[in-house]
Length: 184
Image (cartoon, rainbow, N blue to C red):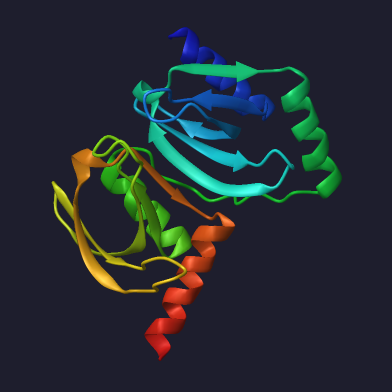
């Protein structure tokens, strides 16, 4: 068992708030609690600096460059989580493959938010519901942004996916607006 797997197991069991860095994509950390992991993927409940639920994210363990635990900052967030009585989304995500992750997130949230951070220097994020897929490609009914609310179909290569997210206030808002558009 690797050092990282050993510590992740400890952090998961203790529900330790940690910071994970993926330096090749962003110099900001992802703060939260490990919900599950395997040798390829980690499933994380994200927490804001104010101790608020920021949804879930699943990404490749190989993209992790460093992990921070303990310390005043994370202790402060933990105190705010307790003070706010923050409730996190507790959903089962199947981490067997990118396909099972996409399917699990879609089933639990009604949409997926897919990031393709390696394609451009700026991270691209696509929010939508899965329309169709095969072993290499996924087609989304893409929801657009708050401003344009443009529904369109988007086909993405699965190999370009770097993370799958759902459950943040922004993503939930985009999903809500997309559902309004379907009723019009």
